[in-house]
Image 1 (cartoon, helix red, strand yellow):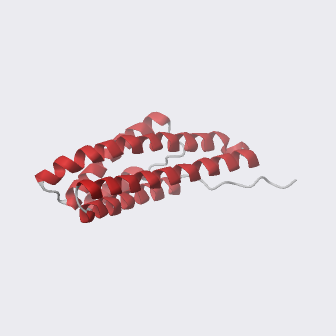
Image 2 (cartoon, helix red, strand yellow):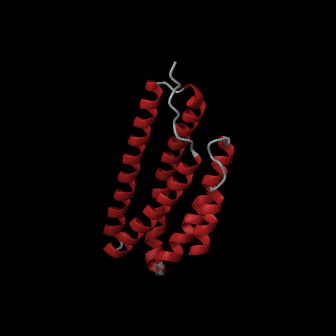
Amino acid sequence: MKSIVFSLALLLSTSLFAQDISYLEYLRTDLQKQKREIIAETMELTIEQSEIFWPIYSEYELKLNEFSGERLKIITDYAENYYNLTNEIAAQLANKKHELEIKRDELIWNYYNKLNDELNPIDAAMFYQVESQLLLLIDVQIAGEIPIIKKPKSK
């Protein structure tokens, strides 16, 4: 598992801020595959559990991908406005990011509950823990590649 996580970190180490959307789409596709491998290796589901888990996880991924598109839009908007950032744009971007984080947290919690109902509390908690850790790793890598806002120079 450590080698997969290391590969994931290396893959994300390329500067995302300056990359075009097609590259980010490719990156997102590759990450989905790696996340599935990590989850499968970590959760050690039986065949019966897998038959229940993976369709639910696939449904979750589809909804999560919608958030990835929204996140990409926020990053693109930030990049486009980086050198001419106004108070209004900064507030809008911060608000959008905050709303997106809340919706993503609600999504993972809803799927934890769904897996808790369909499988058992331990497997649901494992999903919640592993998925949260992977999303955090991805978030940290992406955040590390996005420059901090610069204040305008005083006149």
